[in-house]
Amino acid sequence: MTPTSQKSLVLVGATGMVGGYALRYALDDDSVKTLTAIVRRKPGISHPKLREVLHADFADCSTLSSALSGQDAVVFCLGTYTGAVSDAELRKVTVDYTIEFARVLRGASPEAAFSFLSGNGADPTGKSRIAFARYKGEAENALIAAGFPSVYLFRPAYIYPVEPRKEPNFTYRLLRAIYPAFRVPFPNLVVRADELAHAMVDATVRGTERGSRVFENRDIRAVVKRIHPSTG
Image (tube, rainbow, N blue to C red; front, side, top):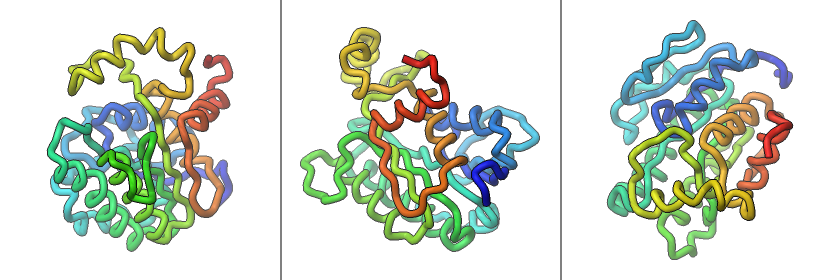
């Protein structure tokens, strides 16, 4: 399949902060032939390319096998916030859900590319004292070992929400407040949610690399710059 061929894309986490933008960009992208959104609740968007598949329990994705058959790529944005849930729940969502979904996708579409929303500081060695870093690293390792021909690992730093929302804790409220000033001296430590989503969709749909590739925050910004040359 050439980079310009239309692709059948799967999106997980379409109702989330990043996934919501990924949904819109994928639907607007002429290179996307069909978009299958695996969701717990409907995102409220109607589009001829969009197929919504309701799925409540990501601990068992076996029933998704049919929906995931014949797919070219997945953008996986499912996740939760550190501090918003217990450590056990954080690991379940970050690691177990990812591995289970990847297992079913690999069986249904073994040649699919897998793009994963990881995070800055993800530690594949498992030595980090930060649970989020260990769990993201563990999930990354599992995806690389799963056998997909292409795995794209996106490690954004602080993700600016763009649209107003209720922040999960004080740290996020503080980061949102200082973002306009912070992004100027430290551009590689922040990224807008909409730009991250656009970069993920673009790299997934047009990517041709075999093996795994890591997109750190500066790499994500480089993709955004290529898509939108006027972006600072």
